[in-house]
Each structure stands twice: as structure tokens, then as C-alpha cells.
Amino acid sequence: MVAQKRDGTTSNWRRPPGALGSRDQSADAGGKRAQQRSSNRRWTHSMVASATCARALAVSGALVLLGGVLAVTLHQRLFDVILDKKLELTPSSEGYSFWHTMDVPIYMKFYFWNVTNADDVIGKKAKPILEELGPYVYSEKHLKVNMTWNDNGTVTYMQIKTWHFEPDMSVGSRDDNITTLNVPLLAAAALIRDLNDFMKVMFNEMVNSVDTKPFVTRTVREFLFDGYDDPLLDAASVLKYLVNISIPFDKFGWFYGRNGTNYYDGVFNMDTGRTVSQLGDLHFWNNTNTTTAFDAPCNMVNGSAGELFHPRLDKTYIELYSTDICRSLRVPYKEPTSKYELGGNRYQADEMMFARPDTNPDNWCFCNGECPPAGLLNETLCRFGVPAFVSFPHMLYADPAVIGQTVGQRPNESLHNFHIDLEPLTGVPLSVRARFQINMLLKPNSDVTILYDVPTVYLPMLWFDNAVDTTPDIAAQFVTIVETVPTIMSASSFALLGLGAALLVCAALLLVALRSRQPARSGAAYQGQEFSPRGMSRTAMSSVITSARNMKPGGRPSVAHGHP
Image 1 (spheres, rainbow, N blue to C red):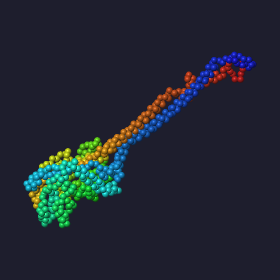
Image 2: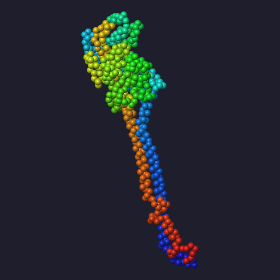
Image 3: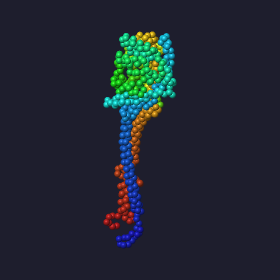
């Protein structure tokens, strides 16, 4: 390089190699320092972002975990509250249409006992030989009418029941003849018991004049819904003006006057489930909570009306009120069961229901004076003074001596028991087999000539099986309610719990990772110093740069304002 001297001459001067290298190093160091600062800023931003993310994960995890704990703890209670609200009966509730019309298959199966040796029973006191005929099957429909929704959480209503004969399901015709006891005669004989002798003589004259017999033969349709005329009933319509006798029918038939009418079953006042443990309970029947059919406390109207039961049933017993027999029935738990994959509890009547008081002391007030044999319920006051006795079909659980008074009854628990299957969480009926038998007591009666010398026998008249079964569609809906929904709620609760725990674990792992990265970039960098790629500190690098700038040509340092 040519350099100009102060006197204007030139000389060949070269920059010291060291000075040139220092400047190059300075340029390189400056660029790398800029890169380092940029890297540090990015690293710092990354650390801040990671720390913020960790805090967010921790907060989110804590909140989700808390929600999971609450869900696990309270999801069953939440489900119960929702279920109870759904089960309450109101005009707008989901269960209203089911209760209003009972839109499930209901069938009434009637079996009649035909006495094949009626003449010998009366003339020779022979043991009645019975022939079981049927079933005569009727489909049954229910409709609630005259409903009043009361402010006290009850509904008052009547109901219309209709029956339609189903020939394809039946064995036999409604025109089949049945020979059985003359119920109007036995009823009349019971009613005149307290009349004076003159009235009794008049009654016997009337019986003889119309040629009434202890046994009658009529068709199935007449014995059931159509009814038949009887001269004794005509006479009773006249006698009621002379003596205190009241017979509310102009014809006799076991179900005469019931098909398509709303008055026979009476007026019900039922709990709608505002307090869910009372859902379906019958408070009043015919505007009273007692009946005149039995002595207190057996005369109390207690239990379900028979169509709705309260939820969360236990495995003890259920109670319902039967208007047909004027009493409450306490039915004990029997065993688990299922219908269309929907689990249930079976409640089945046993020998204690109609047991004598020496076996079941609670039954003392069902005797109506003289207690009947075991297995029979005295229904005399429930049936207008008619000497009727209710039992299970074929006198199941009855005193063997009573069963032995006739030939032909063969009790079988699996065929003749009374049971109700209920889904225990909701109380919804899955299957019902309400089976009862009506029996009449034939015995000598000194007030009625043609009954002077008859045998004493509890004679079966007919028995019926009221069969109700839920449908697959309804069962599927309740499978969703009682199994699927609780399972989903439970799984979701534990999923929330697991998610919250997972978020907290992630937050913890992120914080640990951040702490593990700190030592690798600590030391001088965290004390305000930075390092060049060659390990020189900022102070050392600055000194080198300053020295390079002050070098004179020839490699000597210059002196400010001085000459050589």
C-alpha cells in the first residue's frame, strides 16, 4: 500500500497483519453476537411461553379435576332429581299418555268351572266333579275420564274399561254352556236371614212358583258381560220397597254392567308424585279412605292404585289396593326377573295373604265374624251380602281339606300364582299376572226350603288371569333410562376426573422440563454476559477491537496528537 507522508512524498507501507486480523475478528464477532442475542431472545420468549402454557395447563387441569370430582360425587343425585321430575304425573309429563290410556297389551282370561254332576250334588250330597273350561280371552282397554288435577298433588278421576272377545286366543265359544251354582238364589237366601217369618214364607212361595233350582245352566256370555234375567232379581226389585234390601242390578253376570261404563270401578283419588315416594298411592276411593267390607284396620285404603308405583323399590314388598276385592294387598318380594333385557323385581303373593289369623295375625280383621278356612277371603260384605269367597286359582295355598271338597282342582304355583314384575328404579310394571278365583259357599239353610239338605262345600265358580306385559319398544326406552344414561353419566364423570388429572400431570412435566433446561444456559449468560463462539467474554472482545483501531502503520500504536 502507498502512503503519503507529511512532506508530500510517498512510501510503501503495509498494515500490520495483526491489525487486519483483529478487524476481521471484530466483524465476525459482531455478527455472531447479534445472532446470539436473537437466539437468546427467542429462547427467552420460548421459556416465557412455555411457563405460561404450564400455568394454563395447571389451572385448566385443576378446574377440570374439580369438575370431575363434583361429577363423580353428584352425578347420581343429579340423575335422581331429573328422574323424579320426569316421573311426576302431570297433564304434560311424558308418562301421562301411558297412564291415561294404558297403551300396552292387556288381556283378561276367564276360566269357568262346570259342575258335571249337579243333580247328584243336591240329591245325593255327592262331591262336585268339576270340569275347567276356557280360557275365554278378552282384550282390555283403559281410559281415564273426569280428571281433576288438585292443588295438593293428587288427581281425582274415573276410568272406563272395555273388553273385546278374542276368539283366536280363546279355547271355546262364548255360547258354551256352564252349569254352576245359582248365585241370585244364594244371595237372596243370605239377604232374608234377618227378615221376619212371614217374609221368609213369602220368599219360599216365590221360589217354588218360579221353579228356581240350586244349580243353573247358562252361557259364558251370560255369566260374564251380558247377564241374564232371573225371577228372584225381579222379586228383589219389589221387595226393596218393603224391606231393607238393595240389589243394584236387574240382571246377574259377574261383569254385567262393567263393559264400557265409568261408574263401576268408582272414583279414585291418587297421588301424582310431587313427593316421589308417594307416586301412584291411592288416597281415597269413592271419596273415603276406608271401606265397610272389613273391620278396622283392614278396611283402610292403602297402597298403589295398581298402575303406577313409586321409584327405587326395595326387595321387601309392594302394596296395592284392589277395588274388586275391597282390600289392600301386600305382596312380598320373590326374586329377580327380566323382560326384554330390562331387569326387574318379582313380587309374588304367598300363603300368608289369605292365611288364617293363627298363621298371620294381621289377618284377624278380614274374617267378618267367622274366619274362613286358610286360603280363602270372605267377600260377603264387598259383594252386597253374597256369600262369595276369593282365593287364588285352583285354591292355591288353601287348606287341603277345602280343596278336597271337590274333584278337579289341581293347584300349581307356576300357573296359578299372583305376581307383579316391576323395574325397581322407575317402578314401571314389566309384567302382571293378577289371578283370583271366585268361590261360593253352599251350605244348608233352614230359611230356604230347597236348601234344607244340601252339602257344605266351597264351590269354585270361575277364575281369571289379568295379564299385562310391556312391549319391546317401551322396554328399550327404559333400558336407555335406567342403564344407558347412568352409565354415560358415570363414564363422563370419571372421564372428566381423568382429563383433569392428565392436564395436571402435563403441566407438572412441562415445569420439570423448563427447570432442566435452565442450567445448560446458565452462568455468565444469566449474569448479563454473553460468549462469543470462541469463548471470549464481551470485555475481552471489546479490548481487542479498541487495540486494533489504535494501531499505527508498521504495527505501532498511535498516540493522540503526537508525532513519531
